[in-house]
Image (cartoon, rainbow, N blue to C red; front, side, top):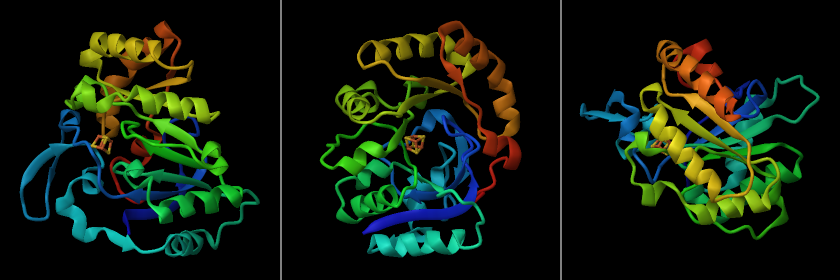
Length: 254
Ligand code: SF4
């Protein structure tokens, strides 16, 4: 069973290496983290006020009733086909597998069939992950996937032991060509972030690093972005914005 929070698009990828690329998003429910440090306030369907990340509705199981259970990967493919049936592009639409934490489903047969289907059909598949879970590469198609690895820093308030999995980071970077790291940076914690990123990079192969400002609204991104841009310039990382938030703020499904 694959628990899907939402399937939406075509839209553009709003962040990371492939920003601006027309894409369909398949957002899986469940996460192994809560990231309460990201400080997004929300209310659950039963009226409890909580704090988490900007995709709390795909993380907090209180929203589970709004998720859809898919028994087979074909049902997901059909849904994506319906969304893209009017698309005029001669190119295959990028498929973004996101969450929550989609690697919670890595060992599920139907999840692997979904990945294999899109890779074999010539789509670029990106998995957006916190890269904290163990995984193995046992098929060639898995090596065609781009892993957008948003490794969490201490500002997430998750424990170091949980959030940095060097074995997984090394496996992904040794098995795939274009995977990259993406860090969410809070301008008030720049010094800590610099040290934490440096330590991570010392323990993995050379990789492209993107810095993204913390924020779930255009205003909060604006408040963080100048310092994050300067940090990227100073350390040779790449700045990456959150285009979808600038354009649509925190509206869902676009
Ligand atoms: S790992 Fe990502 S999806 Fe999960 S709680 Fe943290 S920010 Fe949200």
